[in-house]
Length: 601
Image 1: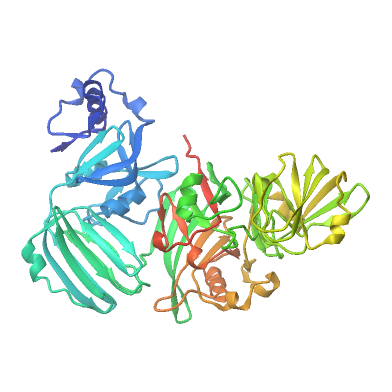
Image 2: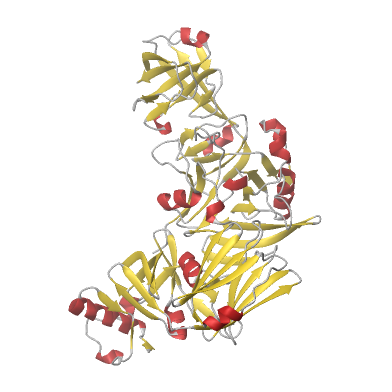
């Protein structure tokens, strides 16, 4: 089996496309030299700017159908790096160049480095699999919208288990490299290895409970072998490969986070590290973003683009928004799924700030600000009365008058019983409508807004049908008016490199302040970059308190830092994968901050 050169790959693909319709093999046992290729093979100059000629999300690997994005350029086939990790077991290694991605897959990066070339299309980063296919004998074909990959048959020769000082290790000995897939739930992992196992190995393997492993089972299933592990639900096993001899290693340990420093693309760096705070060690996963990088921009994203109500996992929200990266962001009411804090996108208030809580604002020039924020809206009537809005486009309600604009959505659903809805069209009140019960749906005028009066008869007397109104709005402080994008959460953690945590001033409860939980944070650095940061449970303990996460951010060198919604909402997304936790453990969120990437031509 011989892997074709890039230009011959193109030639054969085009030839078979003409002769056989949809079958385009990417390997062949015999090919003529490039000089004998048809005249329509692209020249080197033409091939220097590859274009995407086919893509899909259906991959058949050794007969198993998997869902993962793939992309074919004129000279290469690439698989999204999230797919290579999940379906093949490829491990990404540290790099300071965005032009290649070193990986480990039954290899020693010190002696035989594997460097895959990345490219972007839509909201995924693809890695060219040519070098993997060459070195390990993969057969690769494109058939219509399906990418087919066949790897050489493999055999498990032994399974070993042993305790370590830090936990437990399981070693799978293989006669040659082979893919594996991992299915994880809290406290349980099933590893499906594309290798046969002799029934005698299964019979003679004496699984035993270890320091962390509670149970271990082997199962032969055709050309696959399943390994099922159970362990305490707070842990995640680390699964990786070695060569000489070929082995698969499964480590179950409290400190399983692997430190990483990957320049994923220009303007996005993926980092993982342990941070020591007193006697505690906290795992930190973060993305460092350059807001001044050409083609890169940040905006708030919603789980429901059609309106302000609704929730979804960040993984879903990120994919439907077609962002390259994202972090969960502001608070929301879990009962009615409405936002509780500032969301400003492209100068429009989708949700107004509340309670003078912390917010971050930014613009296209890369200017950033974290601080406390208020939006003060005032209505002036044709009779000279002035009414201050209790809230604007918000799920946070109280006595007074609130305003809901088309940015809230096409409809408004009453939040409390006994609300009076006032329709304003072209700055004139056209209708009053008392509504007795919460949950009633009413339209928001396209050229106007709704006023919602709650427990304020005095305000109603000044808002008669026919009254004309003028709206005045101001952000406090005024500096926030400069920023097209704003996202609110809180409390503020760091200002000018100093901890300024004061949750009570932002009306957070004592229990929220003192509890230990996973945390999401957005911060700025001395270089003017933005950091998306997640911090999870300390080794053998709870997540950080607000005070601890403020100290962690200070250690990381944050100039400014804002706490975001945390706990089970804490989620960090990059290129189709969740970086910091099992997707099955991530709660549904209302909004996030998304990173859009328009690659340079």
